[in-house]
Image 1: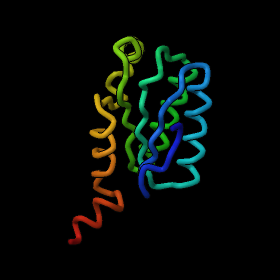
Image 2: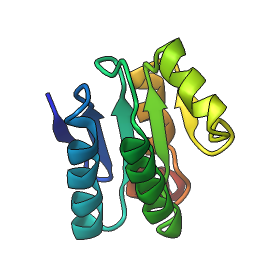
Image 3: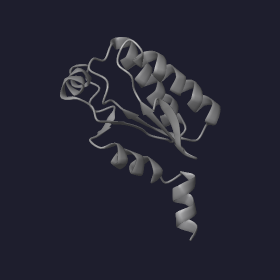
Image 4: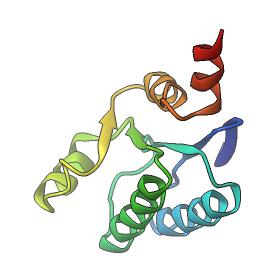
Length: 122
């Protein structure tokens, strides 16, 4: 599936294995900059190793989203990849959810998302 617009305010990403991971994250960064107000869910099902350049790209994406008041959720992260995130001290930085659909629901429920704002006015 790659990168797709899940909804008006959410980008869903099926990350590819290295060495394509960083390139894919960079594409998402450009897409978020173009779109503006959207959250991102990244599915790590195909990722078996995470390089420092991919971690750096994830941090840039997280900062960009945070500056917009949006979230980056990682899902289906293997225990080895969680270990890499933990060893680097980033386990408190990234929000990791087991299931893709839980992650998508959490991003959609953001207080400033168009979907959540519409629900409050009903």
